[in-house]
Amino acid sequence: QVQLVESGGGLVQPGGSLRLSCAASGSSFSIYTMGWYRQAPGKQRELVATIPNNGRTNYADSVKGRFTISRDNAKNTVYLQMDSLKPEDTAVYYCNAQHVHYAYRNYWGQGTQVTVSS
Image (cartoon, rainbow, N blue to C red; front, top):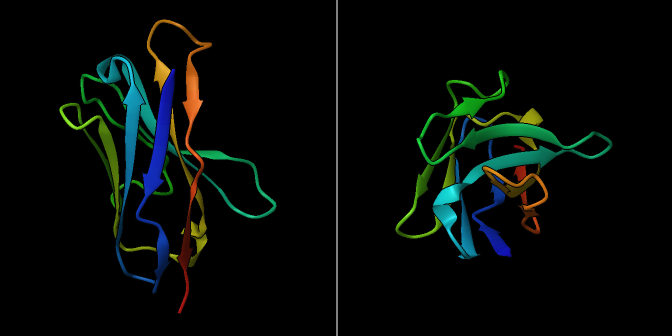
């Protein structure tokens, strides 16, 4: 079992930056691919970025060049640095942990709101 707690959301002006953090508790953080997803009002949840233990990152086209995902296995934490934020980035951002071998071992955080508005 893995528990995920996100933090760092808030209100920011267009062009600004935010850094989200997701702290994981439980077993074997390094064997999980960590990811960030987001869900805007009236839309489906979508992938933002993922990072497996080998550090090979993957990004949605909409955030490439603006967002950076990273992980610190010593702290059981994954981060999402968001720069050059746009109003369309407004959403609830969710942290996800997916076990690399067992598909049923998939966990979500409670979400953190990010609002980009002037």
